[in-house]
Length: 467
Ligand SMILES: [Zn+2]
Image (cartoon, rainbow, N blue to C red; front, side, top):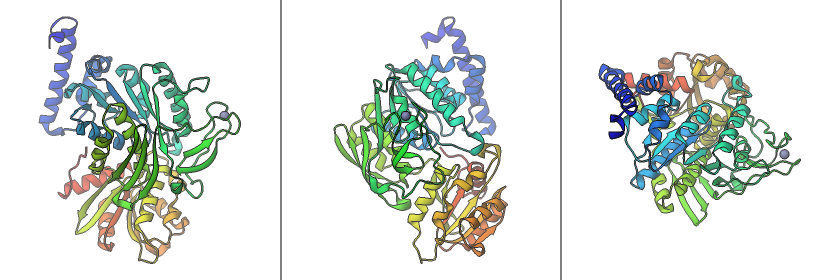
């Protein structure tokens, strides 16, 4: 506290105290624990507060960003650090803009930081926090109306990496060419402190490039990359036929993957000191990528490999990404869909849950076009709903754009008589639950997930906020 007792530290200390008091008052007034109001207030008074508070984290800070999976990856790293007896200052899932980071720094004490950061805010937060480690998972096109932003983001990230090279360690996805290239200097040489992860199990390659695959152009020369195989969207093994730029060999690589549907996966992982086996309770190849990023980060942060494997094995789907809630006696498994690449992974996972000729699975798909979803919902035409044609018993379409969803499914070859449209969230969920024969899979877009959570909370079935 002594640093806060003399001027100008005293003034900063007063601003911290005021922001904390406002947070406490806000919680007392029943606004819930999820508010980032303290951080907003603090940044208003002290725009450089993140830098000042971050410099107190003696063991350094780790930042995680990606279009898909940053919440899960950050949660995995938190679990790994917890297994090592460390409790980082950590922002709540979704509170990943500057005010979320500032709120965590205000309200938690710790020796190190672990922050999930929104893609667009990464350069600004990295400049302030001066992180020891930055983990970059992937860059996917989120919605069609944001087209072009992805390349602009890659350019912004490249400037951040170049500015911090030598001072920060980077954990990068070798299989995403936009990310992998960040680890090379202008001469094409690997930068100091760069650590790559990737998948090297060819049996997991897609039979062909997906709808969601949008051609990536070489960041060096602009020529389209040639792909030998792709695993998730544009993540795969690629090279540039023009200048020869290639996927770097990863230090952390999944060499044998066994997917077990909703039950998760088992993966053998090559690490610099040998090999570890991961039993992941989270489904899908996308979670294998998240786990590889977390393993690489954990190793960089000095955690023993066996401890990392044990921590990941005990993970639960606690991040609102996959969870099962009982509604009227029917288990409802919720899987967020928000963009073509993410939706395709959900569809591939469901394909493993369904068996041909066994009656098919029951689905509830809620498509909203509110601002947080992206107003343009035409991305559903880029997701491979064709994968599940003939595997679905019944689907109820919900949300503000339910009819368009139903139309999309019809074009995907799903029989019309199996598709029902009930736009209103509560009524449609009830219709889907009462028609379900066993488990119901609920696939909401982001704001539909929020509405669903609220509905379930109002019925006393779930808490409104998840971590
Ligand atoms: Zn090239």
